[in-house]
Length: 401
Image 1 (spheres, rainbow, N blue to C red):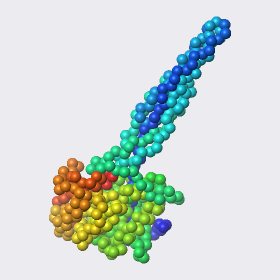
Image 2: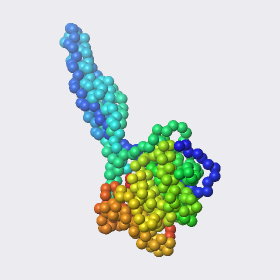
Image 3: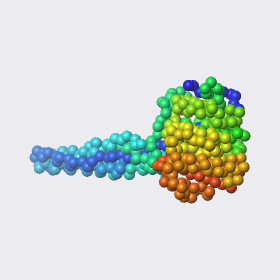
Image 4: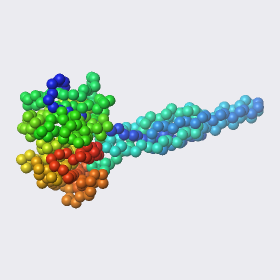
């Protein structure tokens, strides 16, 4: 469906994100020596043929084979004209004398969240005139990501093949089960329609709206989208959803969120394997509801000061989970937040053993979780509010995938 931009909006926004990788190329093999020159007729000795100048190394790739040495010059004919210079040895794809071509580019490897290391530069060929620079080699295999485990390659959405102008940030509406719903979207500056971006959905609390999430006002102490967007470096598309009458967990909410995701996949370049959700208070409850019912669609969720809607969580698919809760929360008791944490800890088959997060005081990482499905938990001395470090902690958690 086509995005319809509306000038009227009473609430909020979001935006999307992903990575490019380096490569390894192969240089040519050592060349064979050239043949000697033919003996001439009677005459004075011929001058030796000159060796060619050095060929340049191919870009990228594992250390390339050295180019073949120049062919030996022909032996001068006895009492004759100069012997012809020997033909240069071949060098990999090309001949020396004429430059040896470096290896052709390999196919791109599967992208990881951490790019594989590129290959070393091939050694320059000795013989021949300057060679044509080789095209990039294959990219390194994706590196494994810290706590999150191995990350697979991007899954580009249909929108990565979309044509037309650059999509716009702003306020829009979408039909969800016959109801017109609103949202705000934030497209990264310099958006590349062929690059699959992360998609991060953010949900506001009961006393707030989508506009406050997009603007970075209360209750977030860290800036737009709970402080995550300023740290993303343009690698994600952000969307702030708008609840009906400021209340989430309405029966229409999951169809509304699914309708947005379907639209974004069709019209924007989204990495379908890296869709995330986060929220505070009622927005956290909505985020948890998505993690329970739609865990096959989301890579990770980050609820702040939330609880289980109705005390139950459907679904069994493991899901990477980050949660936070103030120890003095008078609105939603911290015991409710801990119950959510334990639900996902058990779903992800984590043990009860924790290790303190070295980057954030008050946060712990559970051990023994399913590969790529970590569970992190943060408690802080506060009331019903996002933690003061929400932006940095959530972005670190999401960006590992």
